[in-house]
Length: 361
Ligand code: ATP
Image: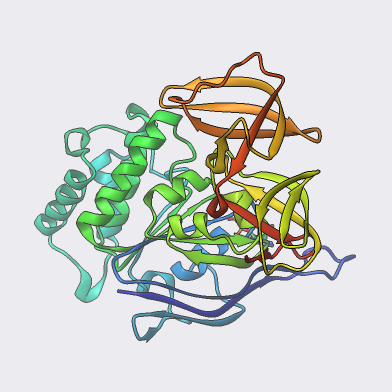
């Protein structure tokens, strides 16, 4: 089932009597979560990710716009009637109940036609527990589980009602680095196996990029860009998106275009024919540098970190740190005072200095 947001807006009124300023948490969002896909809502703290998720779930009302599940307008439908499964960052398990009881809980509250027999409930709970691989832990209490296992219980509890949409709000933030990695792969597997349309909220770009079919990059309640993770990485629409995606992050320089040539400092680094003469902000992805003793971009060498397959060459340009990723087959003499690079044109982006919008060349 697809989820469609049409001009969805959320305004929180001011709580402060002195200031009348309300908060526009979500400003005119229009996007579709395609059937059976996993969409990552990505952006820094406060950009409106959770609010968007809660509006899809029905826990929060929209201030404007409409939400459709397939062709059904669910904008005014109560949360419990929408058929969504929600998983929160803090798991929100009942501590006094066993894993089995926690997973069964949402089924025990079903009423009328939806009511299930005890056997049906147990069947569903077992299937959900198997899916997230906690079926051997059914008699334990949450305090007897690791963080990763608790989060799996929370996911099983969301799946047991066979939701039409699965909504995950920063589900990995309370896990340590290794478990985060493992659990995010698990979420991807579960999502693929069940084919449930899923929306996943995170501020961690790597997380969103690694598991999403599509990402929605947001800033201060405004959608910046929507696309496949690799497409957005390769073709950011503005400096914010370029900076937000990628580790190590994109290198940013002050630059200028003169007579069809892009300059960083005094170095003529790229042909950008067609762009008029102007000051620009230049972004270069770390993998966009080619170590080349005859290259035109000259940087002061400060260090080399070998990371197995690649090495990170750290240098300085006009007082700014530059991180490049170079294949470790290449030998860079660490005693050199300066390194020279040529730039891969498809890894260089230029932006308007004021609006920070991309200038294409
Ligand atoms: P985080 O990653 O920190 O959870 P987020 O991107 O999920 O952030 P939201 O929680 O959706 O952001 O909040 C968006 C904006 O709306 C913020 O400025 C926040 O302060 C504001 N906001 C959220 N909930 C309320 C509320 N109930 N009343 C007033 N303002 C709110």
